[in-house]
Length: 253
Image 1: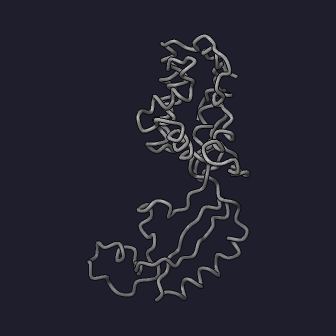
Image 2: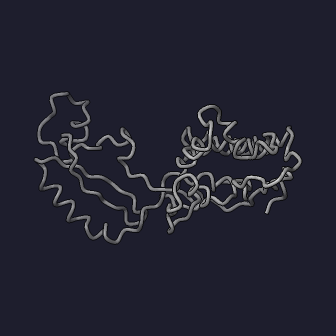
């Protein structure tokens, strides 16, 4: 996702007084370029976009001194909702690289917790009702079979009610071999901070969660590196480096 800014060791507090890192002004053009890419990134939800923009502003524009390091500047840029380090931890946890199954967010799947068994009679709610349009039972249920994609490992849920228990067992038998051979699921959430900014993100993610947290080893931390069905790989581009302490952007690597 384009060039990344460098945040190496930004999480470390200064051990002695130094002259201000940046007193103001900054690089408006660089911020505008990063902000444009962030706004165009359809992987970022509202909370992720706010954090990315705040980080870009803190690195390229915000005045930095002994009392305001880059992470404090990020908190200040987000506003009152991130008043302390716990607030920042919460925002970084939102960017944890992980796989979210299809039923993680309610309303994202029309047939979530709805029986997929065949409908044999019209539902009385009329022809526009989803059960009639999709010709499915549609009864509410929690019983399901999880089908794992053989390429991405992503899940598809097949829900069946008690009346269609035979369909549940049939589908479970059909996908058993495929599921056993499926790879770990490709992450589909988080990983945007490492896609835009260079830092010790493993350290930061563990700081935001626990030291026991482990990244998805098969795919890495950067969302740019994760294979997405139907999309070309994100081209690797030069990364911009910010020299912390001097406040100047170095040349592209």
